Length: 203
Image 1 (tube, rainbow, N blue to C red):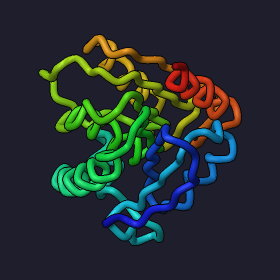
Image 2: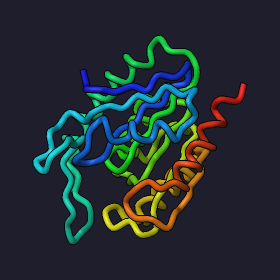
Image 3: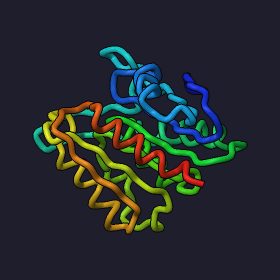
């Protein structure tokens, strides 16, 4: 079982996945800025990171671009799928999956592996790993919020635009927003996310 933290709300659930070198405490810090009716649950990645914190997979930046350990992603994805499936099995109400950076990459991948689990997918400063983003797949049923900073020096804004393009190409319900920020979240991006999440609470 992955380590987790929870901010209890009511039936709506949002599961958040942290980025490289962080842990489950990181994105729980977003909870106070979100509607209190949401239960916010954060998960810790399974792989200790050599620089501290945890990772979902190994990643490297090369002259050719980002190099991702695909086998490592697949192992974490298998663990994450089992964990999230168990968490949402007996829940009622909307479920949203979200993540930052590596967590966004994992969220995007899981949303294609188990599309029926989620009503929404929130992707913060992520990317699309081709091996985990099948060219042929059913039309996504979840709504996606894709956010990225125009000054991101870790995962460039072009990678965020690629995510939005690939989702649009699959006719997914996608909202893509850029912000004048780096590899981070900002008060503006959190406000937009909270407004987007509110759409799932309308009865």
